[in-house]
Length: 378
Length: 196
Image (cartoon, rainbow over all chains, first blue to last red; front, side, top):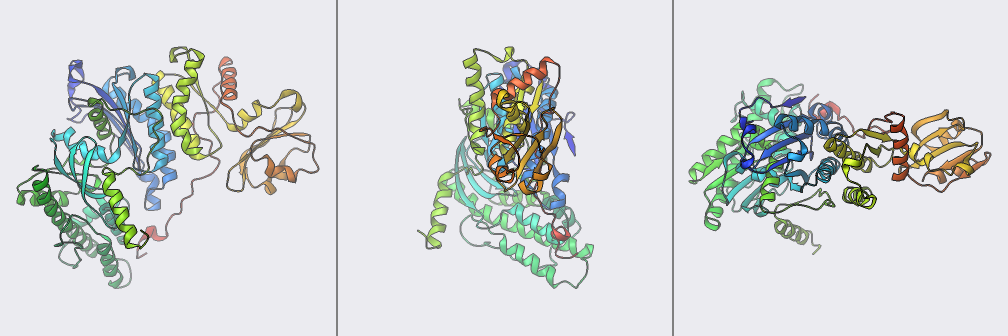
């Protein structure tokens, strides 16, 4: 499946504008199952973009297979770069920097993107920028809506579920995270159990459209408790129990839709409740009034609506980037590169790809310590 | 040094060009090892080579590890011998290729256990190289074997083969990995559904 976006509105006819509009960065994204390249300018114009989705290669396995992903990235990446550059009408010498996702993610794919970016940077003596994939998501609201710091970020994807205070480029304070599954993982597992296919997010959302969210009573772990942490494991188990209790044989469409809707509404309630706590803390501690939602799960329309209501009730504004910039993409990587380049930041060509790379390293260390103490290790 | 490649390689290209007193405008083509070898290491090299070729609009020439190792064999010691290159997969088998002294292929590049492949090797005198040679050596008691202490491909051989190919307007292998092994992945029963 190949999607290029040459005729979209946001691909502004700004190519002809003078060079004054600022620096131009090529971004590369290869950390999961999308092979993507984009050319973005500092005035927030996306000049060119190309994306290859490996979905069909992973679907039979019900999830992303790292080795298959790494192989596909290598085969497709230079073609995506060529297309994005052509669309932008630029040569490599016109660039001001080359950015690639440097982690976190599947290391085999990250290495392909990082090596390609380093090589292009070397070949034209350009700065190389190793971008934290999560920072790419975190800063998307500045590309799309010019959001100003500080803002509260709900980062929801297949691998993450975190609430962060975004103070500036490279400055994040984690307020909460999941204590078990990521929310996107819960969607994928629910879809799998229901036989709705992979990836689970869009499949559950589609089925839920026709469903009755009140049919299956599902738990809302953590709701009503203080703090900003999440838990989805109990919800997933409850879905499993309900499915096991159904009469034998294939599950009928009505039941599938009702289960998907019940699950999706439960997730919405959990996210809204945790965000309300976080917004209170954020307003008191940082004084900002913006909630940004980012990551693949932010593409879910019901959740966007639910978060919008929660933000409004707390007197905050919700920024939710357009759907295609919520899922993995290269424009966000290029943009994060521009943000760092503007601060005079870049990375050496001996940068080592980082399979793990928390936005708030201190929060990670604190949690590891507290978990170790629970285990009686420390 | 699978992980080390991603850090070391691009600065090394820079350093090598400086040492040669050359810039990219003087480079006519990019040659790269396509494997077989560590999947991740092979991809790191190929991604960098493809990036350089893309950015400078240069032709890419892929050279397999067997050819690079064979190129390094000392000609006099190996004259009249078939060449067997055995690379340790680190998974108890070998990446293997064999070529008769005439230049004809004896065993196409493959992955195999030593005991399964031993009968396919030329019975003629053999020059044996590669870091998996110690796995074959004990099984070749009846054959005249000259072991050559070359473990893996050297960038100089890769560049030399490529320059010879380029001079005769040949392109070598495509610049894509020679994995010789399918990715390990299991298709789940019923796609993971709780009901069939």
